[in-house]
Length: 484
Image (cartoon, rainbow, N blue to C red; front, top):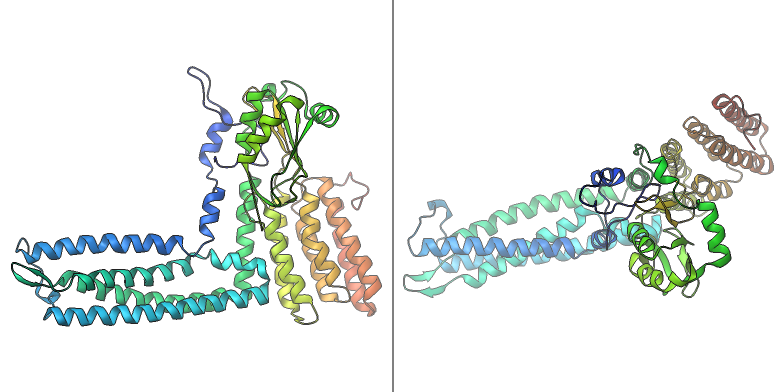
């Protein structure tokens, strides 16, 4: 499967250039951007990949050291005197001690990891477990210990092999096993520090915020190439095609239920160009798709069967959402932590305020970007793929709705949300964005009027609301109604 085509781009899909043809402008831009594939994302969220790689490396290392030891055994080279073990039995005892110690520590590391995952599930929510599983530090720690155990076991099996020069003792292999044991001690110290740090709530929140920023940059890039307006004007417009699809299009049902995790946009553009059709996707990554329900619509209707076969290979569904092509998932993770913190059972207001700060940072970043129209064209400039527009209102509402509903009667949270909305307002670029934020502020004020009994607290919230409206008016003095 090919990597995803950028959600916000409205340029031709990157197809191979014909001999003598001018370079595809979008193709050059796409070559500079690296998109993680859904396969890589799936492999990252496992505990077996990195340990398997390190076990393989340990096996190769043993092959190298064993060959050197065998060459030294036959006198082809001489090892330093400090690398020599007193006897084969002494070397065997050293390797047995190393293997026994390492396998014991592996059990401890595994137990600590499971405990951290359990705490993460209980405190942060079950959706946060994937963040801990995909943590490279945890995977490398487990892999280093398993690799050391495998290496020591292989070296142990080579001790006292009979030969023409007497008993064989792998001096270098034993020395390397001892060196790996020192590395394991350093890794164990790092692991204890890493676990103690990674389960701290501010670190978890900041990590999710980094994922949100990275996904915003991937889906809504700040610098995009100039589009070829002449090519973009070829064929029917997106509005005309959507009308044709609605009236005379054929539906493509979903084959399996689950969350849409990945869509291969470039593949769909290619199959649509090959069949001279237009595809209208019904869902974006992150939406839940039920088997048998329409996944897409195709015009003309006769191309629906071919498109259905291509679509089955160009999208991935699963039992959970991922960050791939879905920045809203990171927003939902931060919101989940915030509303858990605001629950009466936890009552951790400062954690909720931290989540609001990071949510405002993410929305400030996306407010300065141009969200695409969900329209994809082929190389000739004809519209081939249409998907639901990425919505600024959806992201802003998902960031504040549930927190606002959970913060009724909490003036400090309402004031902080007002300040966050004002901060985001400074980065907005359109009147529509400012109206979305002003609507959220209006609902916060209404909730405060209904739930805050203290007049001074209520006046503070009203003061923040008036300040936000001034900011909205200053951003666009010609807009008479920023609250729309």
